[in-house]
Amino acid sequence: RIIFLLFVLNVARYEGFGPGGCMLIIDCLTDNANRTIGDVRGCFTKTKCKLGSPGSVSHLFDHSAILVFDSEEEEAALDALVMADVDVTDLECEDGKLSVFVPPTEQFKAKQALQDAFGEIDFDVDEVQFLPQTTAVLEGEDEQVLEKLLDMLNYLDDVQNVYCNAGG
Image 1 (tube, rainbow, N blue to C red):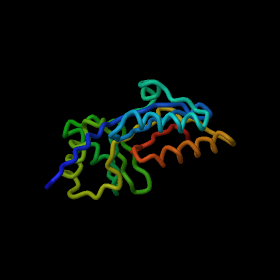
Image 2 (spheres, rainbow, N blue to C red):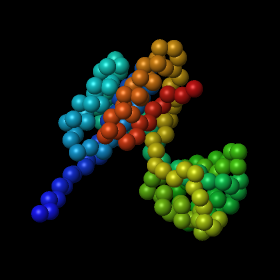
Image 3 (tube, helix red, strand yellow):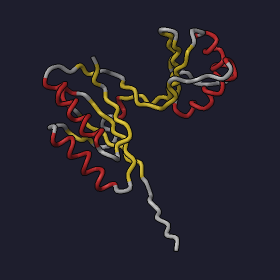
Image 4 (cartoon, rainbow, N blue to C red):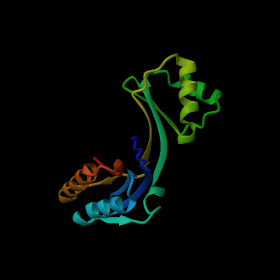
């Protein structure tokens, strides 16, 4: 006898406020949304941080696809992307690495345009992220609280990604 078990996984995104005014976005993949929200809320409560409502933080982050590869040919890359009608948000060249930022919907088209221009590319980074528009600088106890919160969130099985605007 063969038994099939079907698990339906749901994507859940939570937003919150950490210590020192920093902001977090937590992406989860779950088969039980009630358990996951309880687990995430527990992490915030135990660190005296606040879980926000949907949209309370995400408007302060840019949703962006990022492609990073070995190259210093900034102009050639920009030309290839413009010719392929890719909406380039930003292009940075540093230490022999070219970083291309495009809207998530343009990720495949950008990748294809770059490979057409440069041949087969081994991308160091090829992902969609939330990039903070501003950075919160934390010091002292706030740094320790954030570290504890991030450790607790990363320990949860359902948490896939955590984006935070705390910086150096």
